[in-house]
Amino acid sequence: MSVGWIEAPIARVHAWADGLISVVFDHRLDDFEAGQFVNLGVDVDGRRTKRAYSLASAPGEDAEFFVVRVDDGVLTTRLFERAVGDTVLLLPRAAGFFTLRWVPDAEVLWMVGTGTGLAPFLSMLRAGEVFERFGHVVLVHGVRQAAHLAYQHEIMAHAEAHPGRLSYVPVVSREVAPGALRGRVTTAFDDGRLEQAAGRPLNAETGHVMMCGNPAMLDDLQALLEARRGMRVNRRKTPGHITVERYW
Image 1 (cartoon, one colour):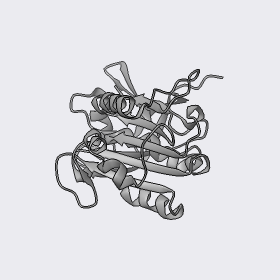
Image 2 (image 1 turned 120 degrees about the horizontal axis):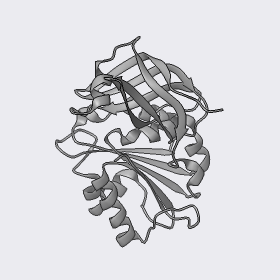
Image 3 (image 1 turned 60 degrees about the vertical axis):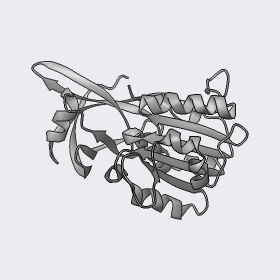
Image 4 (image 1 turned 30 degrees about the vertical axis):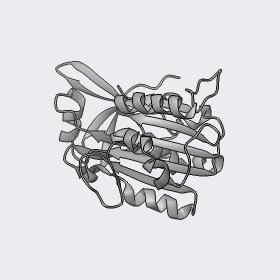
């Protein structure tokens, strides 16, 4: 039976920085895998505009999304205008292959996200399967400004709940931030600081890399991993070491 659009009421909104929020809906989603996405929508002048957003929540939790404002975006500008109690159209039919189902076993799972590309990794941490499948998890979050390093307290709580199993490496490109690497994610990998901060080598023998976020980062890091570490893209028929989710 197909599931159509619903009007989902907003339960909570958390503003991390100007133009960066988390939105939690009073609607629980059970039937999806951590890492998948669903569509949000708005009707404007009789036309429906929709956009896919990765779920930050785990299956069985109220639907949560990590959203950056796009100034000329029809949907995000209106989403930022909504308040608790207002409704947003939600199509509760999850899709996408950026899930652990398709990731080969590895000693170390590297989860590399920039900006709101952190969302699917939050879902995976909350669901807990990463700690059952992999000996160690490295979460890398690249942002422009330190204020955009969202969910830090929760991430550290996951690390405390799984001692020695989770390394968190924040990377800030446009300013110096205590506890974070300075520069771009690709630069930090290229000069060795990323692996040093994680306390783990990033290679084809022990690791698998999941990447989500800015297309330039995805292209550049994938090229570096292929050229420097002999890693290859993971495909269903030909398992590899790199799994990529592209937002645009």
